[in-house]
Image 1 (cartoon, rainbow, N blue to C red):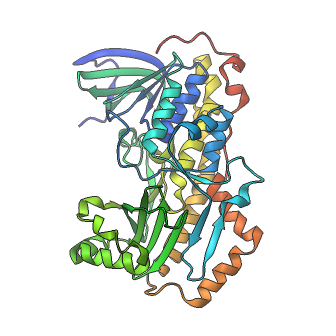
Image 2: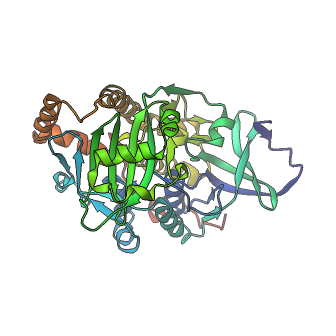
Image 3: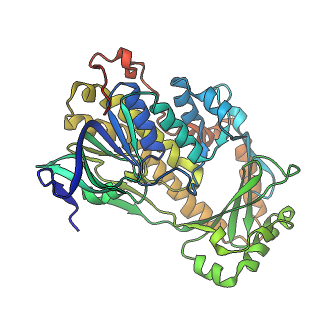
Length: 433
C-alpha cells in the first residue's frame, strides 16, 4: 500500500476541500488543539475515525494543569458543573504502613488541588461542542485517514475514507494527534526511539459501595501491584504485572485472579464475582517511545502520536493537552497570516521535547527499578522500605516535588492572551472551513 500520494492524483475522490489546519484524531490533544485554533478564528477541520467518543478509555484523569488551561478559557467551572466526575483529594500508596499523598498540598498553587476522574468520552464531547460554537470549526466523524497528500517535500493535507467514499482535505498545516497507534505517524515515515518496559497493566472494574474508602488506593503483593481509583459507583482497578506474564495469568483462570484481588483487598470479596469473563479485562502493553523529529514541512505530530507515555503517574493526557496548547500558542499567528515556516514547527518540538524526554526517563526508572522490584514482594513491602517511604513522604519538600510534577508536568503550558481572536493582528473574518 502506498503511504503517500501526490496531490495531483485525484482519481476516485468524491470531493476535494481546503482549510488552513487539518487535525487528525479527536482525542485530548486533537480536540484541545482544534478548540484553541477555532477560538483564534483559524479554520480547522478535526477528523475522527470513529462515529462517536463512546469507547473504553483508560486515561480518564484530568490533572490540575488541564483544569487550569480550561480555566484560562473560561470553561473549567462549567465543565465541573455540567459533567459527571469524581474529585480525588488523596492517594494511599502500597507501603504497608499507610502513606498518603495529599493533593491539598497544592491549594496554594492552584484553584484545583485535586485529581478529577471524568469519562473521557464526555470530556471530548465537551471540547468539541465548545469548538463548534465557532464557524471556523468542523468535525468529520468516520474519517479514516489513509494517506498523506505530498507536494515535493511538504505535506499538504490528507486523503481519508468515509462511509460515502474517498475525500481529500488540503491544508496549510496537518497535525497528527491520532494516538499511540497513529496512522499519520506511520505514513509520515518519521523515526521513533522505543524504550523497553518491564511491566504491563490490566484494567478492570468492580462495583463500589458507599461504605468503601475514597480516593486512590494501592496494594502490593502476590506478584502484582493493585491500584484502585474511586469512580463513584465503580472501582477502576489497574493491576501492574511483569511484562509478558498475562498469558500465564489467563491460563491460571479467573478464580486465580479473584483470589489475588481478594488477598490484596479483602473487602472486595463480595464483588469479585462480577468479574465473570476475560473480556472484562483489558491488557495494556506498556511501552514508551518518542519521535526523533516531530515534524516535516507542513506536518506536526503531538501527543501520543509523537511520544507514547507510560500509564504510570497518568502523564499521557497531561502532556497531550500541553502539546496542544504549545502548538496553538506558537503556530496561531503564522497560520492566521497564511504561512508556516519550518522554524515554527521546530519551535513546538523544542519547547515540548525536553519535558517529555525527562519524564519518560524518570518514569522508566521508576517502573523498571522500583515497580519491577516490588512485583517480587509476596506479602507487601519489607518493613524497612515501608518505613523509608513513610518518612520521605512526611518531608514536605520531598513529598511536594513528585506531586507537583504529576499535577502540572515539568513545563506547564498556559493559553497566551494573544491567542484570543480579538488580540490576533492577523485574524480575518473566518469562513466556514
